[in-house]
Image (tube, rainbow over all chains, first blue to last red; front, side):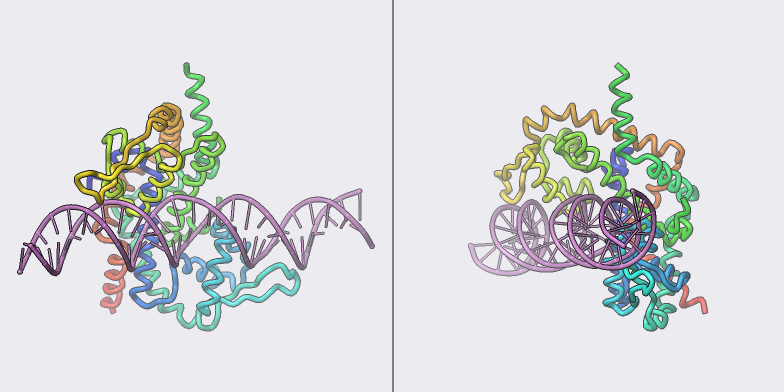
Length: 164
Length: 164
DNA sequence: TACATTTGCGTAACCAGTTACTGAATTAAA
DNA sequence: TTTAATTCAGTAACTGGTTACGCAAATGTA
């Protein structure tokens, strides 16, 4: 493959992560498009949540997925436009939007699920030769969560200065 | 942490990859901003390439980094605006833009390199408890390169249908 | 009870990438 | 040698995410 970013080892990792994540994203979009499904990547997560919980609010979803709330607003607006999600304002707390799956969504779910199952299988295939990947990836996430790139780098910078 | 995406195992992986990649990206931007450096994430890759090769074209860089060429055009335009890169059209092939680092860039490089070294140290720290990560990540990249998510999922879909 | 603070969510502007298209220069082929 | 095909780079429009800001509703407090 002769990949410059791979040769860079630690330096290239961030870009490689983005490259892989983008590649999966665009490929998923293409898959749905070519198969004529009017859904998008990530929607499966919302579908799963709304199946499990019946009703949820924007904030609940954004906290569960650890997305910013405007991101969830955008996704939900698209799903409303496509007729997969309905909203009504909570009568007790009029700030809240109660989200539910529509009849149409429930009807189409079995079809969607075929694709999601195949997709899950793909991820399993991709990970087949990388038995420690999920576990080690989680460790990285936890570390970043605990202290992010900026904090860590500033600390390293300080340490380097002291080492004269 | 109680992360829904992690609980989803294979289903959540794509989103987790994006989450981590975004987190690193935004954190890097913030670092440079807070330290008053007028550079951006990824520019280090261009700097390294232009140090190693003296001159390169847009296409050469986009192939080396495996970015689309419009992405490189955008980055280079910013770097030109900041006075770190100069361009001139190749006299032999007037389509090509010859890119070089400016005097200013060379002058500032030692400062930048302090930050890049500290950043590389951060990535090493993040990977410290994940000794197989780079190796296994590479395997995933190679697999995706060889046959992407869409292709694999369509194949899985077909297999599932046959298994009635 | 009035007022300050917090919360929920919508909008705007931005960001780093993508694909699709274009035009000009080069190269290949008739 | 003319014409067709390819290549290089730039622009436009879009994507899924982000932060920053504002408004209205709910909650806490003097």
